Amino acid sequence: MGADDMGWDDMGSDQLESPRAIAHAVHARANGGDRDPHPGPGGDHSAFDAALAAAFAALGPVRTALLASVASPELTQRVCLALEQQGIAWERVHVEAGGTGSRPASARLAPCYAEPRQFGVDRWLALRAARRIAADAPVLLASCGTALTVDLLDAHGRHRGGCIAPSAQTMAQALYARAPHLPGLDRTAAAPAVGPALFACDTAGAIAAGCRASAVGLLLEAWRQANVLLGRPPRLLLTGGGAPSLQAELEQALLRAGSEAHAPPSYHAWLVLDGLAQLARERAPDG
Image (tube, rainbow, N blue to C red):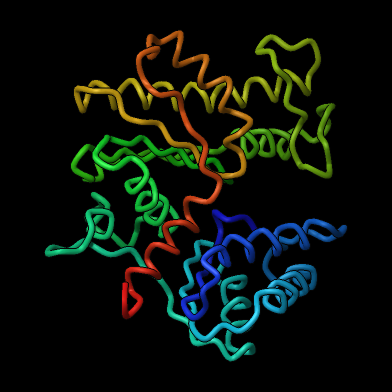
């Protein structure tokens, strides 16, 4: 389970790093065995359950929690059950339509969707954290997980929309699923090895390069269009497990596009969980 699938924040202890610690522990323990930590409906969840129990044991006393999930209903329910078994009162986080008054600007952030709850809660939380990082600068946020999501905030913190595409890894997985005879699939990583060059001299490298270039091309075009729409270049923030493999190539693409005077893209591994922790602090009695 990746940080882009589900997150929760302990609201009852002083361990502000606990959401990161739990997510990392669950992911590391679940991926340490031979079983898939993301089984399909009705699959074997024992690796995930064991990782979750171990993470809770390492965390210490917790009274209440916020839960944000875009994972499957089955997996989300398993986390809810685990929270209840630990005696932890939990509250499900949903996207808020915004607000007014003295709340911080990041707390008033509302997606531009006509139906705000159709906007992914993970995207919303990551945008809240990104807004805090960028302060009054416009932000183009790219989250690279199963999907590659791109969202734009203007300098006033207004959500100007976004786009969604398969991530580079998901593109490769889909190609191999349709053509499993192709050489070079790493069955452990479920994706081909990543090579440095676009013009590869083997099939696995060519697939990896093509998928990666497709993702970088989308981000570059999003940056260009945001620049035109806002009249100024946005700060580009990257998050998600697939982002580091794109960062260097994206930096070079931006330089070729004439962005020398602007900050290079920066990677922030835990934006979804940072946004959730921020929300927990705002909701705390003394927040």
